[in-house]
Amino acid sequence: MEGLILAAGLGTRLRPLTNDRPKALVEIGGRTLLEINMQRMSDAGIRRCVVNVHHFGDMFIDYINSHQWPCEVLISDERKMLLDTGGALRHATHLFSGKEPILVHNVDIISDIDFHALCRHHLANDNLVTLCASHRSTKRMLLFDEDGRLVGRVGEVDDAGLIPLAFSGVSMISPALFNLLPPDDHPYPVIDTYLELSKHHPIRYFMHSPDRWFDVGTPEKLAAASLICGR
Image 1 (cartoon, rainbow, N blue to C red):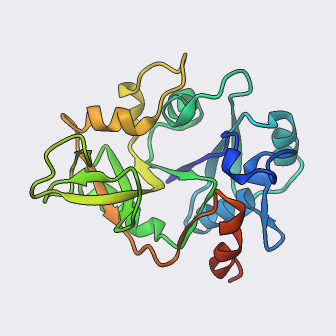
Image 2 (cartoon, one colour; image 1 turned 90 degrees about the vertical axis):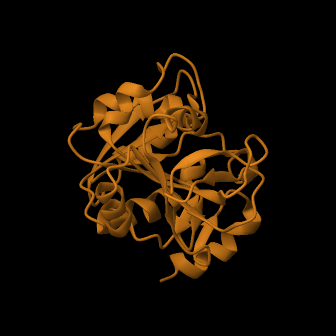
């Protein structure tokens, strides 16, 4: 496996904590979100991890370059333009080997998702993309068929017989995805692209428990995340 940590966002939900730093450098228990997720990915055997940067980009790059990391860290530079999740994937293409599946992880997600099990599921099903998902309440529910394949969004297609699940901000992608993405000359959300690609390519879910999963995108949720980060 290789890794990509999506960390370039403006972190508007985390204000005022992100008024003077990128959200990846917000701390929980004395460790930054970047440190926490980088260690988790390294523990899972990832030896190359790409991090995209934009908000307080110079500060972020200085931080990355001044620290020792448990794996090779490469920077995907979006300081000129924030590319959203889809553009970020396309922009980082050249930094990967093209030979291994890639774990894509939002920096503001903290969980105990089993990355090894995710990779096994991804490879066993020959998926183009595998989306970690769970039964949670969200405004952006995705729909999957009985074979686990992505087919649409709640409210946009007939949901009879389909499984509504919430995407968890963690996924596994195959290198073949890069050739199917739109150009990176504009920002675009990757989920919209996945919904289009799912008509012709296998994009499935990987179920995990929501009990030890945290979106720490607001200051109020940081304290709850310490249940995992304090281990």
